[in-house]
Amino acid sequence: MSNRSTVSALFGAVLIMGAGLSGQAMAKGCLKGAAVGGVAGHMAGHHGVMGAAAGCAVGHHEAAKKAKADAAANPPS
Image (cartoon, rainbow, N blue to C red; front, side, top):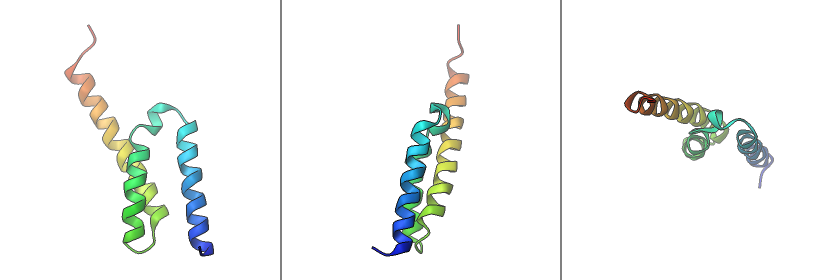
């Protein structure tokens, strides 16, 4: 394992642990997006960390949109 891939793996592990320690609202959608983005980034030229960060942001955004739509469809009584 090269030094670069070791650093990338450690950074990814820290991101996942950090998401687990943060509030649930922040982690909502982030882990799935980070996993998909990390794999896509790695396949697109060894940019797994950037892909994971972008995937986390997109996953969180999509989860927030879904939660907002669910709240609008089911208003509290």
